[in-house]
Amino acid sequence: QEKHVSMVHIESRKSKRRNSEVEIFVDCDCSKKEFNELIQLLKFQTNIVSLNPPENIWTDEEGKDDLDCVPWFPRKISELDRCSQRVLMYGSELDADHPGFKDNVYRQRRKYFVDVAMSYKYGQPIPRVEYTAEEIKTWGVVFRELTKLYPTHACHEYLKNFPLLTKYCGYREDNVPQLEDVSVFLKERSGFTVRPVAGYLSPRDFLAGLAYRVFHCTQYIRHGSDPLYTPEPDTCHELLGHVPLLADPKFAQFSQEIGLASLGASDEDVQKLATCYFFTIEFGLCKQEGQLRAYGAGLLSSIGELKHALSDKANVKTFDPKTTCLQECLITTFQEAYFVSESFEEAKEKMRDFAKSINRPFSVYFNPYTQSIEILKDTRSIENVVQDLRSDLNT
Image 1 (cartoon, rainbow, N blue to C red):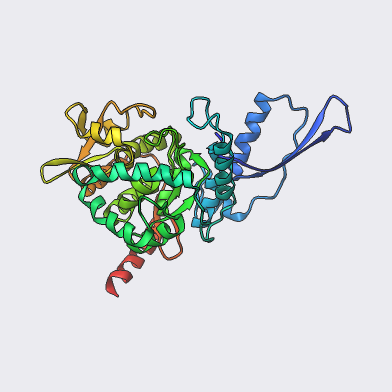
Image 2: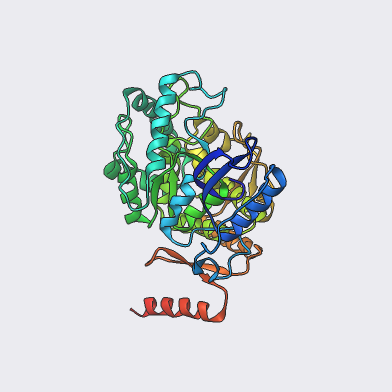
């Protein structure tokens, strides 16, 4: 996972040379650069007698844009299938302190959601889930308590889109919306879509999805023993926290630009971008009509922290990516600081300036027609994009 190499298949057998040795065959999905890094790691960290890497298997496309010096990233939207498979923590593998750890029925249910997500491929309709009575009850508690707070705590853009989700996607206390319906709705509103994911992705893989206006979304629901708490993102968090704002074109653009800035960036720069994402899209505040309002999904899906963040007890600072990226992200407690922007537009402009500091041997452009990433590394490639944009403006 650290080297971003997906293991497709593995076999082992006794060596024909010596009984104490084992021959292992591994089929990997990776770039030439990632493969070479993995080979070096294996040589230093394992007892390998001999190593026989394949030859002449790399396509010409591997090096055509001279990208071997940067971490792999998806060049077309279908390659997000590879990103979504690299789950750091599966949804069925619960920690001992998780509310559902001792509930075997819940654990089996979580395994079902993992199987659905891991089987999903780009272009397929998202499988519809028949939620249990217990799951609908848990969703209902969260829905009911949060909707009491939204009129006084959520930003205008959120409040504008929520009734539309009720009308077109079945946002109700007695119904858990289906991701396929949500994805179709978002596509029409802002160009975003969602796709199921089995659990946590690395910041690099998650941000890569945003570059394509794709949001990786869990389908499982938190354990019913404590509906107002979850140690991980669940579908209540995704649908109530993220989706209403992803339907806003300006917010969608802001989200995509963070994703685009991450493509090919170093691990250090990706971590900085992920931290800025955390304190904006997850826990961000904005000013509207002289009042603080929440636009971060982590706040809009947490009753306790939503109240806290807009209270006098919260430590609120002005959003500045250069300093915000140094703030510690807290998962199991309230944040020690929250960051406020005047508007999404202001936050986007600040992130654009911050992205200029990322050391990358190229720039990127998202082609909405082919849903692919174009590399801008010389005058000719930039001129081609400019010509396309001029053509769009003149028609």
